[in-house]
Amino acid sequence: MTRTVYVNGEYLPETEAKVSIFDRGFLFADAVYEVTSVLDGKLIDFEGHAVRLERSLNELDMQSACTKEELLGIHRKLVELNEIEEGLVYLQVSRGSDGDRDFVFPSEDTKPTLVLFTQNKPGLANSPAAQKGAKVISIDDIRWGRRDIKTVQLLYPSMGKMMAKAAGADDAWLVEDGYVTEGTSNNAYYVKDGKIITRPLSNDILHGITRKAVLRLAEEAQMTIEERLFTIDEAKEADEAFTTSASAFVMPVVEIDGAQLGDGTPGPIAKRLREIYLEEARAKAI
Image (cartoon, rainbow, N blue to C red; front, top):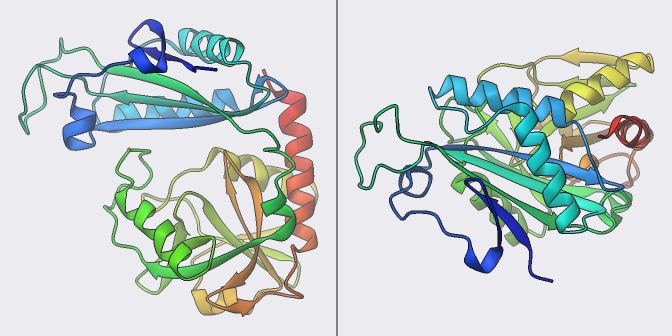
């Protein structure tokens, strides 16, 4: 089935979708994005993604392409048209195009470009990868400093994924000034003696929507949480580790730079957090 996508007010077959070659998202990565998961045909954490999108736009002095209510309607219609039961809705807003290339921002009356599409992912919630656990490597973090803004500047994270693949691993954790920042597309955590350790929020990491929900659920479950900087060496000595993201929820980590964590299988805290997160996410999906 040919996907139906959304481009600037129109629902189109993906084969007919077009964006200007002068669009600033294409020329300058001058764009932000969000990815919302779909379970049972409903949207997970939509409100959080919509709020973070508005923050990203404001941080870059970029116009919003539509209201939150309109955005919700577009998401729901795409899910319906493409018959998505489990999958993702990708959204991107760029500063648009004024018909040429210039480092200077275009005039304020230039309309932003809004694009959305779905990805069908059967078995998203019951991922075999989550049952097995992920292996990660560490790499230097050489990204720009405003990682709290969810921009489409994803070349280095993509390269990090490929470095991991070449090393026989699943993902990479990024390290700056000796401390772990985050994964290539997720927030990072380790567990030691029952305590969950993760880096505090700042401009250095993405303010994960799933991160926020999982830490709240962990607190409600009376788990101990410590938000502080930590090193790869500390994480390698952990009892278990995991990552969180909108598309993988809670993903257990079983190996870091070749060091096996625990018995090499997903740990109990990661498994429990994944379970209670999915339970609540489904209950509150819209």
